[in-house]
Image (cartoon, rainbow, N blue to C red; front, side):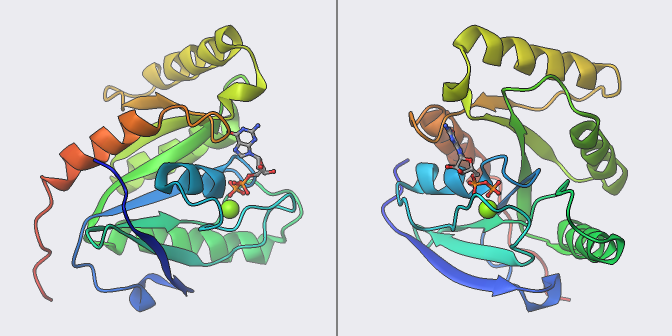
Length: 204
Ligand SMILES: Nc1nc2c(ncn2[C@@H]2O[C@H](COP(=O)(O)OP(=O)(O)O)[C@@H](O)[C@H]2O)c(=O)[nH]1
Ligand SMILES: [Mg+2]
């Protein structure tokens, strides 16, 4: 599959205001600054589609992009930004948990993990939440160009090992670099396969 058309659609403050769930949807989440927006831009081949920034923690909306008129990408606000208040954190959690649990067309959540670091509790805790909510997810390791290949694979392996201690189901994992366009084809093939399993949600 190639992406021929990618356009920004809308930013929504809650799941109720999101676009009609009439096509498959893929959400990207992870710590602030992990590279969510850069990855969306890399996959779609449009460097300015999702806003990237050096000052994390700003976007607090559910951002929808329409891809090939066939499916949605969603850039979600990240977790783990130190400078947010308790009440902002609670608001984030409510918005994210409602979105993830109520979005009927959500095929999978891609959880982004920085390949430069050893497994972080914050990420493992977020996966536990997804587990408790019953949300299917897959892992995308980011910024592989910033360390040696050996270092990135070591951290990825380490992270998967940490997951194996808690989970029976081990998700797919992709190694990526937004700078080197690494991992793009594999993610697109995965999406293409997954799109075929989409069934239109029943109207409520
Ligand atoms: N070297 C490198 N830098 C990256 C990569 N992905 C993101 N970045 C940088 O990391 C910072 C945060 O990226 P952004 O996509 O805004 O992260 P987000 O907060 O998760 O959406 C920006 O300065 C990006 O240029 C990557 O694959 N390689
Ligand atoms: Mg972003």
